[in-house]
Each structure stands twice: as structure tokens, then as C-alpha cells.
Image (cartoon, rainbow, N blue to C red; front, side, top):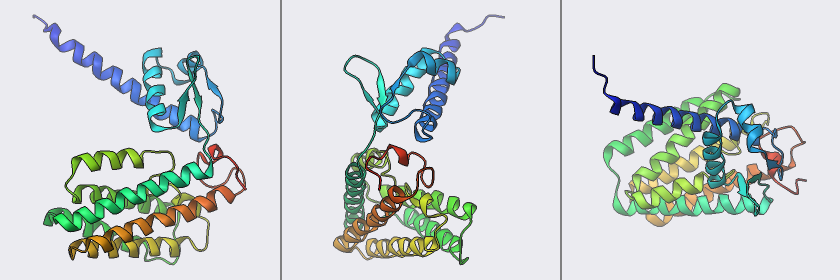
Length: 255
């Protein structure tokens, strides 16, 4: 039987991509878990041993985490784990709120496809169902995080701009800037569910403004919505060491 050798390079390429993704995910876990402390220089050969992959996927993972903002390149070569001031993180959250406000305004002004609007309503209905219990367990919070991410993703689709959606995704990829970045720090708080109820009401109000084609109102609501994340940031940095959000140890000047 004659083998088509042209089929082998794509398989090899696919394996390489898989190894790079594996290395990227594990390296991110190590950074956020504090296994690689803030400011620490990263030894590439050590990562090869720890991650169980070759140097090529390790280098790809390091470059990707630099793009995400978790690492920075050193003048003499190599990478180190970044640290962030509270101001850095607050600015990233503010930028995300500004971009999502723009997305909501454009969605209201341009109109939204009925199918996408139906998806958004179904997503919020699912969040309402999660928030019925007086308190939420870890599973409930995990479900909220997933649905919250889905709603914010749908907001990107609503505005009908691939260019802005791509930039919004980049902003949400900044360290601690995602819509659910600090939800986990509230898990043990008695006010946790109440804060999520407020956030959900803002979701509902923003969606209503978009449907009514009220662009300025939709924009203001989504910008205000990001302030909840700012409040949770404060709770995270004031929490005792070892509690709350993975990676919070990378934020400098904690109280």
C-alpha cells in the first residue's frame, strides 16, 4: 500500500500545537498558584522538566503568557513573572467597562439579530434560576461564572463589529480584567449572592436598553457594571494572604 507522506506534516503540526497549549495552560496555573513568584526569572530548562514537553512548546507558552500580560521579557533575554499595582488592575477593569459600554451602545444603535437576543435572554434566565437559593455553594458560583462569561461574549456579538469584538477580547484577556475575575473572592461572603443579584439586574437593564435602542443608557449601564469588579478587587487585595483569588499575590501593595 502506498502511503501519502503529505498527510504526516499536518499531524505533526497538530501535535505541536497540542503540546504548546498544554504548556501554556500549565504555565499559567503555575504563575497564578504562586509556584513561580512575582518578579522571579523563569528558567526555560526547568520548565521543560516540569511540564514534560520540549523547548519549542515551552517557548511558545512563554511568548503567549507575555502577550496575556502575566510575564515580561527581560533585557538580557528570558522572561520573569510580572507583578501589578492595584492601579494597574483597576485601569484594566476600567478599560474593559469602557469597551463594553461602547459595545452596548453600538448594539442598541445598530440593532441585534433576534436569534442573538433570544440567546441573551435565555442566558439571563439561566442566571436567574441559579440565584434563586438564598446562598450559593461552589457549584452555584461556578455556574454563575460560566453564564456570566457567556452573556458578556454575546454582548460582543450583538454590536456587529469584528474589529471592536477582537479588541474587547484582548482587553478581557488582560490579567484580572475579565468580567468574572473577582467573583470567586466573594464565595464565602454573606453578601455574595446580593452582589450577584445587583450584577444580574444590571445585565437585565442593559439588555432592555439595547432592545429599546437606547444607546446612551446601555453604555452607561455597562460602564457602571464594571464597578462591581472594582469593588471585588478591593475585597481581594484586602483578604488575608492565601485566601480568595488565585494569582492575587501578584498584586503589589496589598493592605
